[in-house]
Amino acid sequence: MKQKTFTFKLIKAPRLIDDTGGRVLEQAAVLIEGDAIRAVGTEEAVVPPEGAQVEELSYKDATILPGLVDCHVHMNGIGDGRAGDELTTLPDEVLTLQSAKNARAHLYSGVTTLRDCGGKNRTTFMLRQAVGMGITPAPRMLLAGRPMAIIGGHLSYFGIAATGEVECRAAVRQLVKEGADFVKITATGGSTRTSIRTRPSFNPDEMKAIVDEAHKFGRHVVAHCVSSQGMVNALDAGVDTIVHAIHQEADGAFKYRPEIADRIARQGVFVNPTFSVVRKHMRNLEAKVEDGTITPAQQESLDGLNVSYEAMVNGFQKMRKAGVTMVCGSDSAWLDSPMGNFQAELVAEVDAGMKPMEAIVSATRDSARSCQVDDKVGTLAKGKQADILVVKGNPARDVNDLYNIQDVFLAGQRIDRGNYV
Image 1 (tube, rainbow, N blue to C red):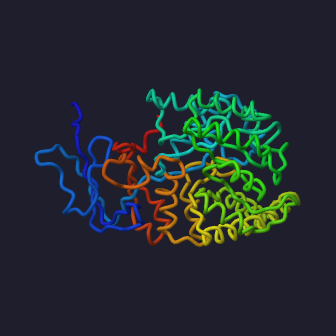
Image 2 (cartoon, rainbow, N blue to C red):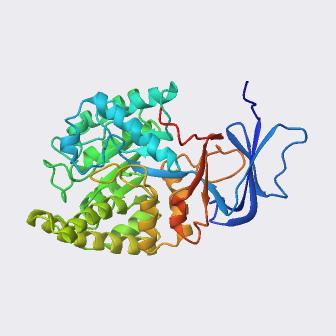
Image 3 (tube, helix red, strand yellow):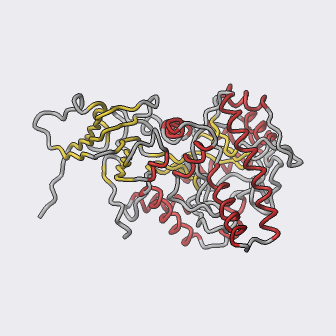
């Protein structure tokens, strides 16, 4: 028997967060027509056209909100603790399959848009092709392809190691040709073993060439920065989003620099602090302390992480007071942080001082702004894509209620979260 199709869907629940300003509507409804939102408001105000074929979905003790937007993932990652240096030794075919698994896990957990900040070679582009063919499900994906790095720099093993303005511009053009939606720069070192974590990577003229070339083609730029000078260089170059944004000197000392935060706010640059990936690593090491299996090297690592995490939270709080817009990105599946747990980043933001509603806005409206797709997603409004999350409870009061997934809608289609074929 042929399944009946409906032109409209009417979703009802006791609460709705539209995220246009963090407001909560009671006894609310969303009317979907095809893949787009036709109306949002109270049940009384949202009425389907007379005589329309309507599928009605009514939820009890639930909240409707926009699909979550994770503005920082690495779909190639496995999340089992291995460093990127080992991850990149896997064949591209394996990493493409792993990326498909990760994308599906994020979608099923309520993330309807993700921004992948760097994968090996053309693996993420191959995933997008597979998704377009209907082979595997995934959220909306914004892809950088290979991240921009220097020789031996952070993430250089993914496929680009550019030197000088000419090579930098050529690499950006190649990425645009391959289908990159944005450009990811590693402005400092990082976990890559051959990189120098607290030192800038690209020279200022190289950074400016990358950003200029990306902007010329209408692509935004995201910069990995774990040092203060890296942030200064990124701001001089005109990047759009700074990831990590750790106030750390070249000698490793943590020193908050208010003039940098003021500049970030003045230039309208978004900041993604990536708490959860660090906190997950810390908790795994803490578990080793509790069961008596931690090694001296691991204890030293844990001690260092405790200091750096405190500095991250301190910087987060002070940058917010300075007017910096914080956006939500998990950095999964890096290190030992598997994908499918984006909610942990919102919980970490709340623990660091945000109110639950502020964290929700950071993970929907503001992350969509950082990804430059806020004209399509991030809020529930007429004409936008019908990317919708329904959770049991009220996450505006308890952000942990975001874990209570009842349904996920992508472009108006309810996702079958039990489908693992």
